[in-house]
Every structure is written in structure tokens, then in C-alpha cells.
Image (cartoon, rainbow, N blue to C red; front, side):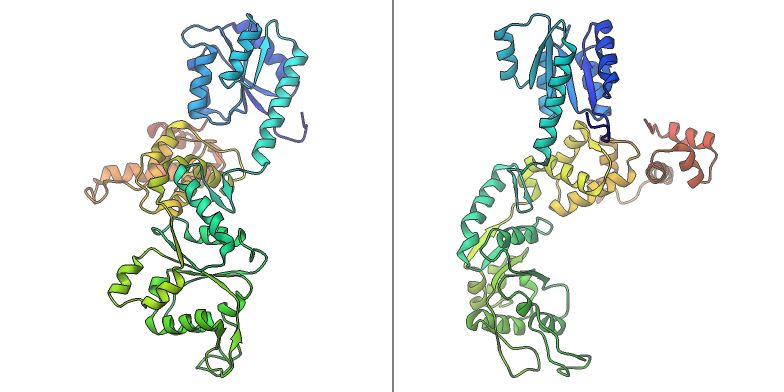
Length: 444
């Protein structure tokens, strides 16, 4: 083992407690952290509360044997390796174990050195798999759902065509991430990727941002300024919320796309530009054209090809992957979602899509004191789906909710140290423990 790394956590499952304790002592003497379970149900209970890197389980156990335990682990803990031990070793058993998804097979009596070698090899393989290239990460688009797989195939086919692309999808569905993926997969990948939200500023400022201006072109123009169209030369210009662009600017953008030239505000000179435009909108642009709110000729220039991003509700299979990625991105410790918390995330409607999921994960981190993010924490972080029907709650319930959230946040700020949390809350340690007990908050 690498002595500079944190010790790997192993879960040893065997109803022969004497043997299990002996094996645990051997493994701990080699630097591993070992938790022992006497049966499959106890093992599953431990997995809900503890971050485990590797499971070693006996085959023959009452109520739930090694095969049944492995099936449960595969349902809820994707990627967690499981090694089988058995006193009834045979070639058919070993082959069957491999078919069932066990990473290796040890025969009793256990050879200590062989066990250590298998564990080390398995853990190295797990790390390599984690840090290696992800087959379902396409330039920032993280997915495992079939609907996203089809979208990525469409992007791959379009990336090098150089045609302008219109991305449509709900707010928060990841339109800018998709636009960046198109850019990075294209021949312009080494050029700039410039993004601007057309609905985020007034029209006169948007014109200057897009096309640039000369000194003195208007009040406040104290120097020449390059526009984003010029800055994107040789690369990709991403126009987010294009449906919010004022009609007079739509005319100027259309000319840029037709002539491949741009004239800064206040200038008589035109500059050549070579850009690929990817635009996006959550609005129905076709309807906007019918309502005379968007120019039809510009629409056809922008919408040479269109792609539609699915809502998060349409790609539920991606939620565990996305939530875990956001969790690792936002925190440096080894926090994990337990299966029940993932199930709770899957049951939510996600009106804010991927952006909302990111925010909810951030909220969970803030209010979770322990390493395991539980269903209760997720429930607290998620907006109440019935809040429109229950706009007001009683004062006692409001106080209870505030106390619960406050204690969780204070514990998070103190890193789980109750004494420090009590100081932050300006309470003595005994009173703080009473509050924790009152709200059934476990700081293990």
C-alpha cells in the first residue's frame, strides 16, 4: 500500500466471527481499515452508513449467501468490487463467481499473501478505472442514458460540418455545455470559444459587446473596444438565449452571417471574420417567427441544423452519475450519497434541470455533517413539491425546521466537531447534544 494515501476501507462479511476477526487483524496489520459484518443484512446496513472501497464476503451464509449479497451491492453500489471466499472451492464455483460479477475468488483456508495480492490488485484496478478516460464523458457532457447517447452521436456527426447549429432545450438543461462540446469536437477546437447571453443586457450594450465600438462612438466609449464576434474569429461564437435579441440587432447579426464581415459601432471600416455560430434558446423560435418577434431569414441562417437537449426528467439514468460528479467536484473529502438519497433524487421532477441538480448537491454538502449524505439531507435540500399548496406552516413547525437546518449547518462548518459547533452556536456542549438528540441528528 502507498503509505502516503488514506487507508482503504474494506468490509469483511463472514458468519464465522472468529475467522473474520483473525483476517481483519491480518489486514489491519498491513494498513487497511477493516469493518466486519456477520451476515449480508448487517453488511448492507454498514454500506448505507460507511464509505467502503472493497467488499470480501463468504459464500455460504445463512439467509443471504454471497451471491445474493453481491446482487444487492450491484443494484445500489455500482463499481464497488466484491471478492468471494469459500471453503468449497472448485473450478465451476470460480467460473460461476466471475459470471456473477465478483472480481476475484479466494478458497479457504485463506492464504494471507494471496489475499493481500488480490486486494492490492483489485484496488489498483479500481483507481485506474476511476482516473482513466470516461467512455460516457464527451467533452463535458456526462451521461449514461440512451437519449443522451443518441444526442452525442448527433453532435459527433455535426461537429466538423461547420454549419450553424441551433440548440433548443429547457433552462438549465446544459445548452452551453453542449455548445462547448460541439466546439471541442470540431476542427475549430484550437480556436476561441466565446459565449454571451443575449437576454442578460439591454440592446445598446449588447450591440457594443457583440460588434465592438470605436472611441467616442457614444457617451462612455473612452477607447476602442473589440467585439465578441471579432474575438471569436477562427473559432465558435455561442449566442445563448438568441430569442431575446432585439430585432434591430438581428438585422446586424444577419449581415455578419451573410457577408462574414463586421463593422464596429461608430466605425466606417469593416473587418473580415470567420466564425461558426452556435445559438440556443429555451423559447419556441418558430412561434416567435410567427409572432413577428424573430426574423425568419435569421432563423434559417442560425438553424441550418437543430438539436434538442432533453430535460433532466427525460434522462433519469444520468442523475446518479451527475450527482456523484458534482459531489466530487464541490468537495475534497470522501462524501457519498447512500442508495436511499439517490432514490429520493430520482423521484423529484427537476423543473430546473441539471443546473438545479448542481445547486441541490451544493446544498446537501452545506447541511450534511457526516461523510454519508442521507435521504433526510436530500429531502431538506429539495424544494417542497407541495409548497404551492402549503404556502404557510405553523410557527412550531417553522421553528423545528429552522433548528434542524441550523444544527446541520453549524456541524458542517465545524467539520463535525460537536465542541466547536456548540461554540459557534453559543451554547454549551451538553445543551447542543440535547438539541442534536431532539432532532435525531447523528454525527457518526
